[in-house]
Length: 87
Image 1: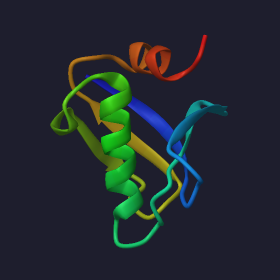
Image 2: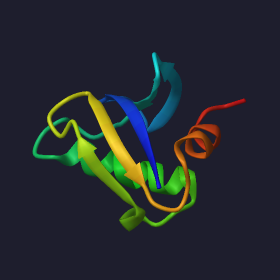
Image 3: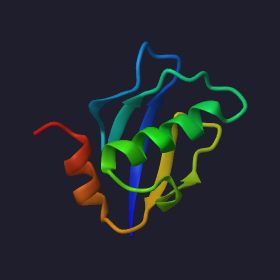
């Protein structure tokens, strides 16, 4: 199980991983930051990008913040970062 730090940018033109932001992965999400829509959208987007089930990703911290901490079942943080960030 790995934990990964994220920096989220809501209201983007499209969902995409744009690189690193310090020690976090920066992700743009098209969904607005209201009523948890961006949170759910980012978890679904990451599940798709990581090729895992949505139920294997949990938001641990940062529900109302752009900085989030997620927990991913089945892969560690290094592997997750490697799958998300272009080499």
